[in-house]
Length: 121
Length: 110
Image 1: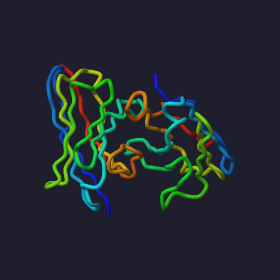
Image 2: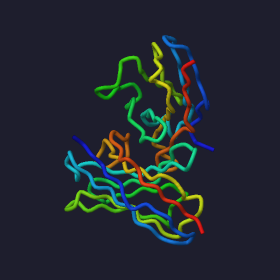
Image 3: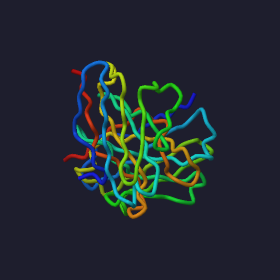
């Protein structure tokens, strides 16, 4: 059974940093791209970033480019989202999701439960 | 403002057919496959349709997807009360080099 466990959310001040983690199980982690999607309170889904199975390719939404980084550790079956220079508008539930492909984002067939990031002074 | 355009709401009575549209451009829907997600309040989204018209195992056959040109649609045939949820379309955008979602459509069962 595929499981994704998101963690690392919390309250942070504007300009601060936070690292989210997503531990995956139930599939061969290194053969699939992974993605982060966020949802601001009462709003729709917004794709944030993706990373290929080999970690050679990374993709970012324009709104987070230069501030967020994505990485993965195959020895720990974990994908990370390092968030820096956080803004109030980054406040959202962040979901980790498994992509269907190896070197492309594709569609998202499994999702984590989400972790809440609140950026506020 | 989302890159993919969906109606904010749709409704129907039990047993009716409801269709949700998703309009994009050549760089997203016109060039890549569309997926659909179902989300209930307070829960994570769930994959409903992928590759335009494919259903993952476990998704009821009353859900179907289609795509033509730069538009896609999700149909729910034989609407049931448990289908009341938010529905999102998504696709890769070659110009943005990123994935894009629609704003979401809230389906209400009257």
